[in-house]
Length: 119
Image (cartoon, rainbow, N blue to C red; front, side, top):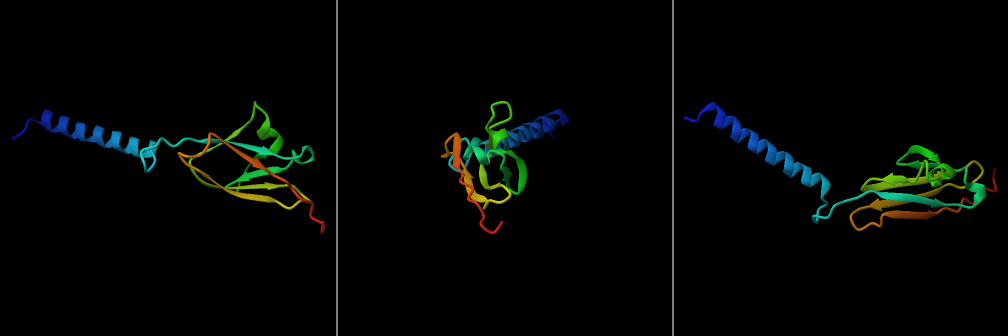
């Protein structure tokens, strides 16, 4: 029969090993690459700098604010994201962005918001 201290020590060692394995799985991609976020940079004409930016359906700010160093850029976590840039009287720009270990550290989107002739 084992002493209680030895049983506790073995259980703790197994717990620590599990935590290390989970941490490695969360920070490494499927091929063992470290996944990192990517900075989103949006280029629009000056007259569209007040367009609204949505990521995955959530409002994140105006193009102008996200291009300023004090408030931007927006960092996108690894995964697939839906980007939408909207402005009244213009057709929205929609893009699907995939961020993974092979992505550059900066994702640049050129957004031309065309006028909606019906408005």
